[in-house]
Image 1 (tube, rainbow, N blue to C red):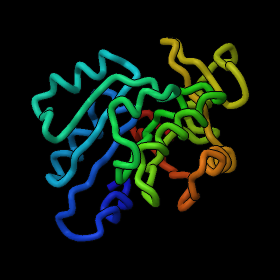
Image 2: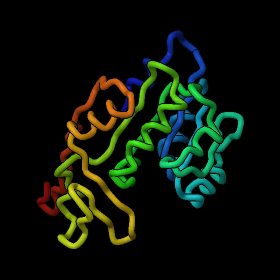
Image 3: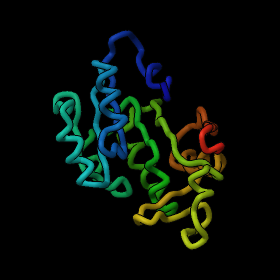
Image 4: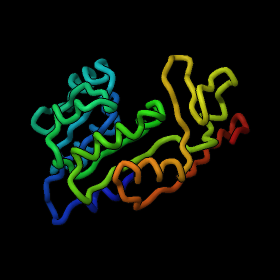
Length: 192
């Protein structure tokens, strides 16, 4: 539902697709995709070895349909696990914001190496003035649009201009780059 573009990666019905889920966490996006699409093979990686272990222990984990591994996307070790130009689509969902802004380009360059020419990166992350950004206290700011949470993880909040330039500078073509607006209402508390 989130990325209709994934469906359009196929040139014909039943074509097998290869996906890289960069920053897979514990598989909350990975396993629904594998369940939904039986013609999908996924590479999945995460910076956290614990997250990778959770994915491998999941009842739906099948090594014939998924290869999961620990990876620092700011380094060149992605090619140790994924052949060059072998992936039809890459998902970067709330991943790039956790990387220091000076290293974001390295992530995109490494992902570019495994992506087939003309294929897509499906990206979703924090936008400038996101509610999550507005909740940070003054002492949490590390830099322009860059914050640290109490657990030590980081969050960068993107403008569409910065994001577009980041991708274009790494060799990508901008196809769609827009904010997704969500409104959450708690009627009981009277909060919006």
